[in-house]
Image (spheres, rainbow, N blue to C red):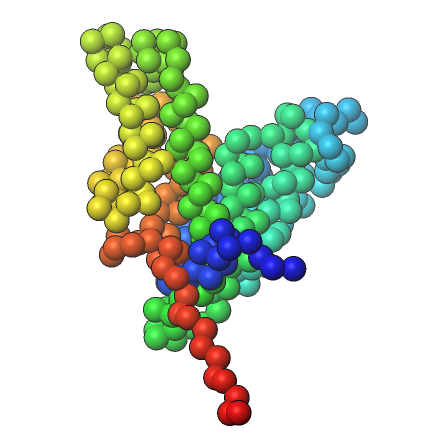
Length: 272
């Protein structure tokens, strides 16, 4: 069956191996951080879920909590070090999707995002160890889907905040750990509007080779600012590392590598 022509740029595009390798290692780092959270909280969460799961599939039994979190940590460590990346990514994806679909209590946006990205990463081919191979390009459709996912995160994040409660500064003033003078409407309202504007800008600007350097700077500043202003939560660090892990796929050198077409395929005609 003929593949629709609209999918050709996705299936025939290429990405530099070094960009994908760096992204996968950073995703492994994010998974390691999430693994610490699972190691500390998963057993008690499984006990709370008990025998009345609310998800599509049964959750792990409470006694399996340490085993599940241990397997997660091992797979995350392998991915962060670049060993057996595809198998490690697939393991993280399966465990993450199992937990997020087995119970509403175990579901978390950050865990689901990380599991989804690991699922895409399990299809990425980063084999090759010599320095020359780092510049070689490999099939980029997993990278392109990761890029789209990041744009969706920023885009829907901006849309979800476009309401009177957030834009009025009430949400920011109520949730930040900043000094009280920063919670005044004169500052909280502009800060709220700026946050929405930055997220909307990032959803689009990362795809533009002209705007991409500014998007990199604003994106890093946004995530660092979130960590500094909001109360400490390990999930916020996981979310920041997960999002920033995808930035190498938007190469600062110029056009997104994932958008560059593959070399044309030449076929030799047989002599008559």
